[in-house]
Image (cartoon, rainbow, N blue to C red; front, side, top):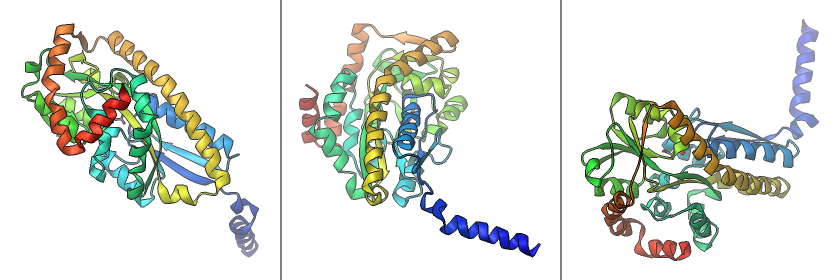
Length: 329
Ligand code: LMR
């Protein structure tokens, strides 16, 4: 018995001080709120694969999808506290952190396509926005796409008048709030993990999201109609705890940067397909009717949301909006 204890102490001591501990991996907890089978979910998995490969196993990435670790607001706090090291919140979720500028991406119809988006994120403005995170103890590493948002509800949403009085779940962006107010709707901020249930129980009537998010959260099963509006964009900023990142030895940080660069290319190359596939699955399920707008109806929606630009200028600054539009040209 005594010798068994002695032996286990010896094993323990070896484990603590021996070569095994010198090689114990650095853990990166990467928390996010969507399913694994989404543009972001797949991007996170790709980063894990490449990060572990390029560091020769010195880094282990633990991906926690579907809000299993934290919900929207908590995950940002957890990152600042160092309880997790990496996240990829949407551009629409930085307001509560005191950074409003990412909400410029929420302006209705500001991005005609992903090519235009790329010009902005890869240009000087994209870099400048990432720099704003430094002051919050956060380092911005990359921009990842999801795609364009559609409107869903239990009533047909065709004309701007149809939005009057409809309760919509929104992400925590004031620009999105202004967007729904411009339509006479009642926006309500809610964590992503709570949307399905809120739709199911009628706490809200509708929501806006990408095909991929709608499908993987089964929102189409509790929404009778989805209108193909493509009125706004959802994309992510991949972020890390700054101190954690800065303290990494260069021979770890460099391969991680390479892994992030390649995971970004991978993620952005597959996001469109994820959304196309999700749309096809929703159609196949027959659970939601998908409504397409005519050119005139589309024009009416754009017109109804125009005042959002003026209102957003008061929050994020006309200068920022102008800069965005210039780089998007
Ligand atoms: C949402 O809250 O609707 C999205 O930002 C979720 C996500 O991460 O795509």
